[in-house]
Image (cartoon, rainbow, N blue to C red; front, side):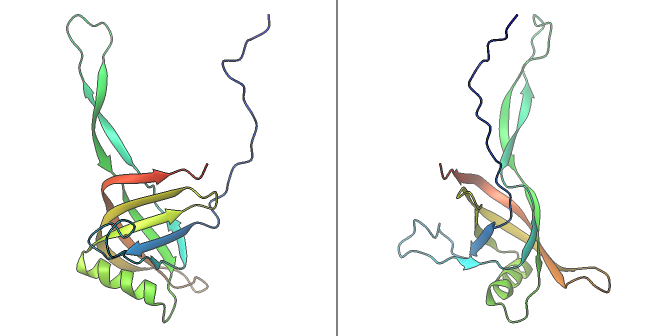
Length: 157
């Protein structure tokens, strides 16, 4: 017996994350929509970035008449993430993010993947650290942040 597919699947090649660009802004309003327009500063040397997005909780709504538990979506919560990067001497973008992290600032962050997809969000910064390592490791730093509010995703397609 032949199986009838539920949709027409077309095989595609995946995009790799290599080429991801990240920028930040210390502007209080969205740099893309404020007047005058704000500026974005490149965040160079990033080697690792956490999950970007919001995820909701689940609220149980089971009644005595139900025989299986029932749920509905609850409030969204945001991601806490670390961004790790090679520390470059004299890089003004890295100096700015270090200053913002040490001050506990709220910043705007924009990430653009090699396939053209973007994510934009505000983040509360809670810390800065130099990452430990061994003899042959490059000097790296990390900033800890938590996304504050919704993430705006834009698909390139």
